[in-house]
Picture 1 (cartoon, one colour):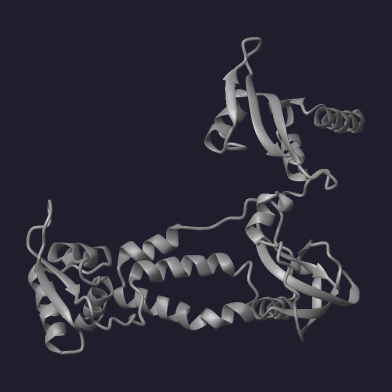
Picture 2 (picture 1 turned 45 degrees about the vertical axis):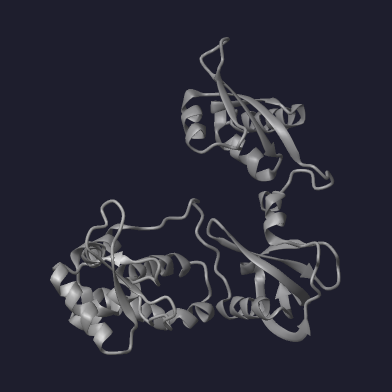
Amino acid sequence: MADSGMRQILILMELPRWPKYKTTKQLVDYLKNQGINVTARTVQRDIQMLSASGAFSIIDTPATGRGKEGVGWAFSEHSIHRGLPVMDPSAALTLLMGYEHLKCLMPEKVLKHIEQYIDEAKAILETFNQANFTSWFDKIRILPNTILMPAKIDQEAVGEIYEALLANKKFKCRYNGRPDQIVSPFGIVQRANTLYLIGKFFDYNDIRITALQRYSDVERLDESIKQDPNFNIDSYLDQGEMSWPWDREKSDTTVKLKANIHSYLKYHLTEMPLSTDQKIQNNKESESYKLTATVVDSHELRYWILSQGDKIEVLSPKSMRQWIAQIAGNMNTMYQHD
């Protein structure tokens, strides 16, 4: 069990400011979830000790409402309640899980800034030494949703890109082997196990999406980027730009997809639909199902359809059906030979 000091810190972290409050039972349950089993009397003693120290303005109030019998505890309404520089075991575990995920994506130079918090999280879990937390960390893993291995990135270069992005500064770099490229970074997006930079090259108006592994020899400049008043990263992504639109010349790349799908794919798309207006209906003419959905006509969509093989037949748009038929025909020709 953790010592009384850690227990009292956790109690302080859980107490709200009046008029909200926590009952003694709620605090006992909270501590139990953190791996500390104590009695209600112990919690009351801890709170009284903290209040008597004069460092914390804690008040007690009759708890009201259904299931709220007993005493409620809170910081007084006008107390100076500063955040406590410690995390509870649940937060520590969450941070460590997130760190394991980020290690494959973020440059070491960036992750170095949170090392002290990672060390703190590890120390907290070691202090509590509770099986329910340590075993959880041993049983949960994060896997990429692709068979491809992550690309190797230049850690120093990507670290400089992050710093330029945060400082709203341009940077000079070598991109894809081309030296002396001047880039204005607008944002970074993670997609699967790849990080992409959204930005502009030199003074061109077009916004480009580039993979971070293609950058090297990055040097942050003193020149501030020229903000684009029409650019918003969420709006940009909502347009489907990261799905790589099939025809970038079109102002509207959304289409009404109609297809016949196999029962296997029907169950899959019921769980994870293609769009909010997706509909799947029984096909009276066969054992398949009719699918309709409003989607962005993109490279991502078309190659996803190809990956489903004979489990889906696109009916419209006609241009998409013809393209898939051509690809299928080419593949058929390739596989005619042993």
